[in-house]
Every structure is written in structure tokens, then in C-alpha cells.
Image 1 (cartoon, one colour):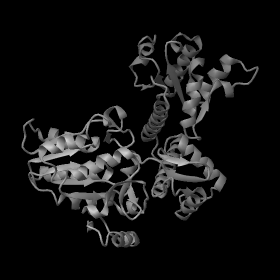
Image 2 (tube, rainbow, N blue to C red; image 1 turned 60 degrees about the vertical axis):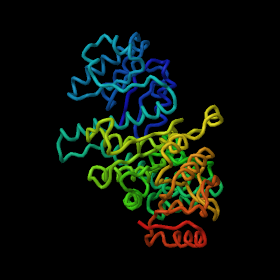
Image 3 (cartoon, helix red, strand yellow; image 1 turned 30 degrees about the vertical axis):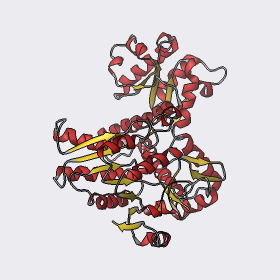
Length: 454
């Protein structure tokens, strides 16, 4: 696929940055690399737009709409679009005021992608949105064309997109149990991917280049790769929710069976407790229980419950359930609320304590974990999570740890609860997990903690 980028020269750094996040099979026409010394600018650019390009992407700002070259490229692209009878010109708006001031009134009626923030996250998001839009246009073009004719651009783009997403999922899943203290060798990751047939004829050097590209495009956020080893630095909500989904649903269904009408419940943040919030919603809709008070530090869990309230048309004083959410900073990678700012944590008690004490403490709490600390108890990656989870346990009468078996292989350093605190672990025991569960059973054998299987 060939894309012509029409832009003011001031935005060449932005264009190069966007190019960095696009798949290699998308060939961008950029004048600084495609024009040779001595080329006629007018004829070369006009020819590129009219005969050698699948789409033209135009970047709109105040300088662009005053640039004779950009306006000429806009004119050529619109004329070519009329000739071929399909959408050919795609706008990216850098300044909304410039878009409103465009002299071409018809063009201003089009949908555009907005990029008014040049931070790394926004540029990456723009590149991802652009890929999706290109794929959508090719899909639409194919659906209106001869059904028996395969569009090579569409197939190449779809195959590359599917391969990239699948490979990133495989890598995240394989690296998931490894942390900085015990990282995974890249040579071993390469072997694991080969064994799973996730890589075909690719060699190790090409694999390293591909891994680097996945990092640059943001597919492996939260993973650290130093060229020899790779490990999870920070679990991310977007890919955590994609792991072990069936297992989490089983655990959540078991957990919800312990809830009774009138309970005061704490929902810790995490992908498994999010599944539990969905099960609680099912229970509320089917009248399994009522008069619940739910306290959480999870934005997604609170949203799930409040969407139910909106769906059911509940009034403010409804006796079905009430939701309380703690205060603090929202972590972008987990969508959990944490109290990690020195300004707050040194002068105020934890919000779970503030809410639970007046309520007479929680009847039941459901808590997530990142892994184990030696053979002593459950642990997480950050100090402020220790405080949050410790207070949940302290102010709750019955505490359940919700964890899929993969968590029991992960070694973490920040302990928040010991096995002597009378915890109840809800997990599963399938054939693939037998060794992991047997090891956990041996660890807690002479403690007050017990396992409940979903």
C-alpha cells in the first residue's frame, strides 16, 4: 500500500514519528526521500498523487492552508478522487481553527482524525487510528467491488495486522510470569514461540528486530527488553483482561456465591474482580440479593455497576445497591485508584479505612494479587498497593484472594498478607495447573489459609 503525505515542512518531525509506528508494508511517499536532485517538483509530486498512490493523507494547520504547495496537492488529490470514484483524500487536523478556515467548503464536511497533542502516546494513538481507518476503507472498497476479486492491499494489511496482534498476545502471555528478579532470556522466548509455531521461518536476528518494532508500536507496553532478557515491569489493564478470561469467569462465579443480601462488600482492583463485578450485576438483575453496599478502588468495576443502575433506571435512594469509590490518583495502566502521592498519604488515612470504619467494617472482601512472597504470603509490585490491600484485609471480616494459577508462579517483593491471616483463596485446579496447585497446598498446609476451587 502506498500513501502520499501532504504536509507543511514544519511537520516533518511529526510525520517521521508517525511513520515509526506504522507497519512496514505501508509505503509512505515523503518528498525528502522520494525526490532526487534535479527532479521537477511540480510533475513529480503530481504524478505521485495521480498514478502512484493508494491514498493521500493531508495534515491541516494554519501554515498548511496558507501553503501554495499543500493547497495544490489538495486540488490534485480531490480531482483524482473524482476520476477514480472513491474516497482518496484523508484529513488529519492539527489545528481545528485551520480546518474551519479551509477555503474548500465541501472538503470540510468530511470526518477527520485529530492530533492536537504531539506527545508519544497521542502520536502512537493517531498511528493506530490511521491503520484502522485505512483497513476500514479497504474493507469497504472490497465489499462494493467484485466479490471474487481479492484486493491484495486488503489481504496484506489484514494479514500483517492479525500477525502482529497475535504475536504480541503470545509474547505477553509467555513473559507474564517473569519479573525483574528472574527475567526470561530472549533466546528462550524465541524457542517458546518457535515451539508454539508463532514464528515460521524467521531467524533470531529478525526476531529481535521484530520485537523492537513491537515495542516501538506500543504492543508490549509494560514489558522491559534489554536486548538479552525480557520481563514484566508493570501489568497493564488492556492486556491483563485478555489473559485467562475463562478461568477468571469461573473464579468470579464461585466468588459471587458467597455474597448475601445486606452485605458490605469490598472489591479490590484487578481483572478478576472486574469479572466479579459483572457477576454481581447478574445477581442484582435476577434478584439473587439486594441491599448491597459496594466499596471499590476500581474504575472499571464501579463503571460496570453504575451502568447497571442506569440500565435499570434506579433512583438515587434505591435499596438495591450503593457504590462507594475511594479517592486518589487513577493509575493509567490498571485504572485503579491509588493513594501514592506524598502530599496525601502523609496527612490522611487510607480511604478504605475512612469509608469502612463508619460502616462497621466490610462483611466480605475480594482482593487481587500479583504473586507470592517466598512461602510467606501474597505480594504486589508497589509499596502503595501494600497499604491499600492491607487495609482492606484489616477492615473486612472475611477476605478472599481471587487468583488464577499463573499468579502462584510469580515471585513478588512487596508482601501485603501472610498465610497466617486466615485468607481464603479462590482459584481453579485443571490438569495443566496440578503441579502449581500442589506446591501451593504444601505451602499453606500448616497455616490458617485455605483454598476453594471454582
